[in-house]
Length: 588
Image 1 (tube, helix red, strand yellow):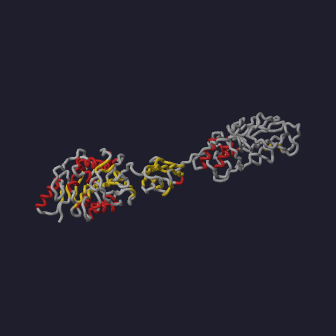
Image 2 (image 1 turned 60 degrees about the vertical axis):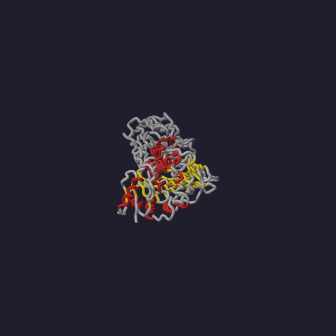
Image 3 (image 1 turned 90 degrees about the horizontal axis):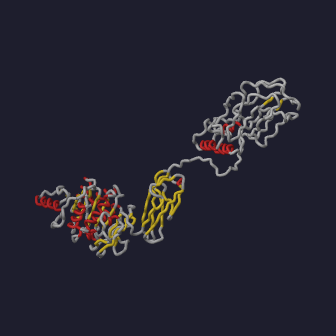
């Protein structure tokens, strides 16, 4: 036979029953309207009140029918007073709680179990278990002395404040479960739920009057300050605490006999009593890239020494100790949940966690040395030129020291990069300006004519290496005859290589600004290093090396060109010209 299943205290109309006997029907309605447990005399002091605040969370209050139904009803009334949109169910037979859970999306479930016996409400317990496990991160509150705050008229004072604190703290955390009972004689039914949601059982029996509380725990101070102690005179039991099978930690909120290891109230909502561990660095939400990360945890309370273990949700164990240092490059790119688990000397346990993000490293090329580099790279083309015929001009016929050119060579309208005049006077030895190796520095424009008398250089070419050998003719040297353009261009590596021809120069199409100084068809750090040496005047380049080094085609070779070339070696865009697909030797 089934009796009353459930009713809504606030509306006074939503009642469920199955027996059609008229007498039971009337009794059922009276029960729903009064809030009194089945088979008991209605309690005159149990108020039927409308919440003063708009309900913003729904709750199911499950009473396991027994000797203390009236106290359960009083506690349900305080839940309504706290603002909950609450349904009441008094379990006498199996099924009504399961039906309500299936029909409603509850934010909170409250269980009041002060009934002896097996409490064989299998489907109801399973419905509660399934509800919690669908989101097992919900907060848990366990109270093993619950009736002490609600009998003897205390439900209107201490009980009402305690219910409001419990409801409020579950509400601001998105909902959760409350498990209330007393000593071991009343634990059979509720411990079925404990096992199903993965926490240890209630147990034990204490004979006390008051229980001290953690005055820093939110359950004892918000929104009501519960003071330093609660009533504890119902021969209460001990709640589960510490690390639970489901991975949650239950913290002591109030404790029996002056020992925080024998809690009468425990919760996943943390206070300060007992052993605690906290991550102090880095801060939650930090991001890292290509750097060392310092992880620091602080243990407190409990008994020393502490054991501290670190782990990552992506990379597993990270190490042990109060402080560890990890190179961010060894961690997986992405968001990590970093967990620290601390254990004290008495095996009390606590944990803390933060989220950090590991970013993809972004290389930033830099070419700013702190001192003059000492490297001496060997370029593909030797900077020191030892030509077969002197690059300055060697006559094919050996003139006597007294000979003086009597006529002026007539140059072509446009000179080629070989410096070979297009016509040769008959009374003047032909002057060949084509060395077999790359000249040290050749401007991009060509001098246009040759003087009619013994040329005298107006400027000493600076690009020539200090150890350039003196040109030697085939027979008798002519030290005073050095055919030189009227205005010899000076090409310092750090300034624009400029020739001052008498006519309009034609740019050399082979002067490419691509950064490949050793002409091996690829850009490397060696090309950047050679460029930097040219910028510092450590090296004297050939014409084509200088063109390649002038990466940005601004007429100068500077550290900026070296930096651009180094960036190209790392894969970044750089020089104005592309690197030839084949090897480009000097003059090719």
